[in-house]
Image (cartoon, rainbow, N blue to C red; front, side, top):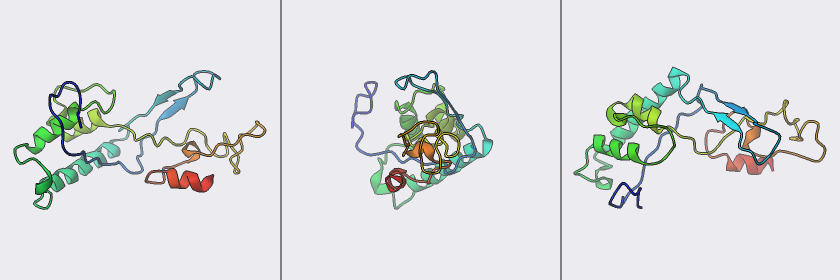
Length: 167
């Protein structure tokens, strides 16, 4: 696929991503108004807890070991070093976080600059606070919330099956 106007080439391949499962860092969600069309204020607080950054770095080391393995050698360009691969990924417009000039110089900086969510937000509509145990919105007749916002923790994978089960 074409990976951006700043690249004059096509990338025949893919990207391996790693996930910090069950992060300790928590974010904050706040409604700006009662207008349902207005985007809420979201603060993710990625890597607020140092253990989450450590997990990301460990995961990146595992990915680098896999990419450098003999078994994976037929799936990568022999002329591109691991550092160059990290630089390419760091340059992709995957999120709106500011990049540092040395993003790929350390795995800690790489994690901080390239972190993103996969849009499996959860926890903004907590059972017992916003909805009752039957997922009915507290104080509102005839309205239920059946989506991942009611999860107090991520199921550890794409939440679609869990949401369909609730529905």
